[in-house]
Length: 633
Image 1 (cartoon, helix red, strand yellow):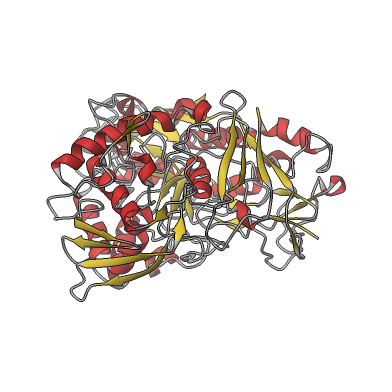
Image 2 (cartoon, rainbow, N blue to C red):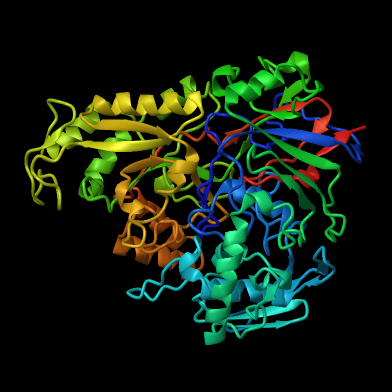
């Protein structure tokens, strides 16, 4: 899943079924073994069917994400239809893909407080140019609707930190260029990677306040009172249309695309959907295939059963799911060893690595357990009960690696401090139990009980009352045996340290309703205590501004730490690596309400692919480049 952070926050709650080693668009590279990847001259045409699990389908088609729609599955659809200004991550690299980006070049002003972006000469499918005003439209829209935008971070006035769109004072568009004037100087690498990559140019055809009623948000002055009113009206209409999946394929709004694909069908009942090439696409990376069909199954097991009849069988899929329980043991030197579908026409791709950390969330704002979650020792104790390597070896059969910190270690390319490089999230239930005992808890029974309330050394900590039980409710997504096995292991190991985890399975769609920070406007965000839902995918710089900063749209944990805010701010304004290293080192000891789990759900992905089908090189940020797929001659 993706609670993505375009390092501003793609975090997105994305929801691919954990443990299903089969996300569309996996790696084609080889790590020394036989990858089986189809190679040869691309053949134009052909259809490919791809398996997905019910509950992992897109929930919105509009590339302006609310907390409820900021997910991997939505990005995966939108990026095929609507190209972002800056496209990162192709071919499993933490780098800008200039071919797939709408931006041609960027030029910083001499004072470092302005940036001019020149766009490529591209067209929307209705014939209009993709130009600077389309970028201005997005920014105008974001400014007027910032509190509804998942990628928005509330300004921290104590440290004078601003994020997009608040850090933009004015926008001027002219033809293929757009100039942004900023409120101060920023770390230019951070600004390009984590701010500008949030922008998706929007066509004038989307400037609507009702069906057939044109608005003026497209041309209003940036940040003006008129824009605030007009763009808010646009949002109400567009967001409603964007979540009405039964009309996606027929609504002319979403038919105006600038990407290599367009939506052909979407069945809101079966959640099957299909893509066909955008014949008006003006980019150089045009689609090879005639059609991509996404086929929904009720479970991994159901999908796998259909695949067993063979990749060429009627009604089968060419890119399939291999459930965790059916995985062969990971063998880096020979990926095909033990492939259970080799005889029916499938090869296993070599896994690609997603720039991702896996975890489950804790809710600092929950009235029953929030105070407990704010204690650094409790976070450490809970982390010590997670047997990541055991889960990898058992559930994932070696297809994974541990999450040790907030900074992904795979793929290579992230700035990682020396302290973080040497840090390992240890597994020791005895150490966890000792930590609780040393901080005022009676661990003779499970759940442990706070018997020494207070803030002195050896006491339970601020807000933790006498008699507080070391227990909490844990929501997880149903539909995958691998996920169930994993959370049962988390529960069992935590109990050995005196921590009782009450696991509660719900559909991913149901859990998505809780994915907001606690507030009077969002009471559901106050109710949950712990949730395993997706992961955090950085795109690309691994700063915490969109995820951990106070007020961030994706900070559903209601986490707030003034020192953390300052360190995050430093990473956005100070050039070089020193600020990033300081931030990383502090996260190792802070009470960040995340408990790290193994990277194997999405992070180390392989899939069953039909012989003769070449798939893309994998995305470092969980996206899929269907235009790079083709049948070989």
